[in-house]
Length: 388
Ligand code: GLT
Ligand code: MN
Ligand code: MN
Image 1 (cartoon, helix red, strand yellow):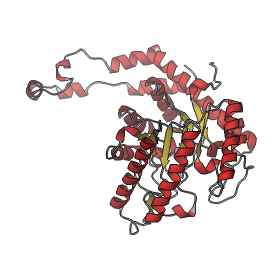
Image 2: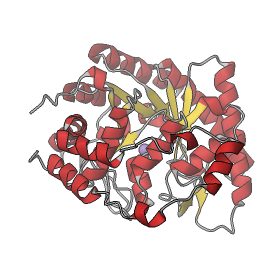
Image 3: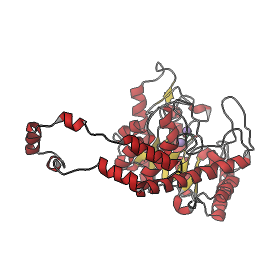
Image 4: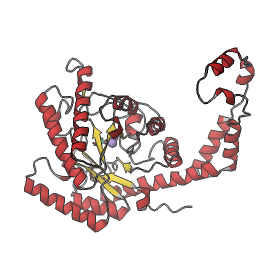
């Protein structure tokens, strides 16, 4: 059994809104006391987290006066200094206030779009002041219930214009900041634009400063769409766009459950952790989740500790997988290559094309191969169940 205590080098972070979640949902009110940002920082330090992320209004209420803002920020900075916690990421709340009921950057109302830019620039300033290097955009209200209301084409153009504006703002201010776009298919809107990480990756290529913009994929959001999260993460990694990640868990086809990391789909969580560790992802490991509504303050700590502990247990399992002689022998067999077709790899040439077209293949013999994936998967499951 390994040591599963979180350490700063693990880069585990939580949003103020995660451990600060008091259990309010569309059907019921808070079940836990509301705790202040300073209290949250101390709670996160106690459970061993490395960093804390926030929306502008998690820290500074939307109604705060400039004097109140300065006092709140000073108190928060002191809590960070006292605990050693850092702020790797910040974001804007563009979804709670009624002004954003029909979207922020994609609203039909140009005044709302201008206000969204105003609010985001101030929020970027706040994030940078506290040390954030990654700035997340989750467009929770950027969508529709009825497509009679808004042109999807126009909405895409508005979203692009807003991000281009904000990239230029960050460059103008000489901020050392990257943007990470977070997709979600629905909730709170009936339909949210750019609903998957893949859609975000396609959109980023259309921006004026694509090098500044990557993605912040969230387990639960791809699971809501019934997708394989690790595959989305791999595509983002391959594109050099995995700037941040939101870890949590939930079953397919449900509402946005935001459960503790690894609480539901252990095999998927394992392959995700294995991927992140194998490629040596070095960004934040951010848990965007919250405790069950049944639980009180002690449950919140159990939840936060559980997220980090499960990650570290799965990391150890990934190391075991990579060192397991039987699993590795099977993989070697699966990937065996006698080099007969090496000449056809490594890119196109006219010669290769001609040779491939005239080559004769024994299709039936090729299909005869027993791949032994059942055995490989069973070994994986036994490793996860702790009997290997
Ligand atoms: C909100 C949402 C999350 C986003 C946060 C960032 S806020 O809780 O459900 O997935 O990451 O805006
Ligand atoms: Mn998220
Ligand atoms: Mn979520």
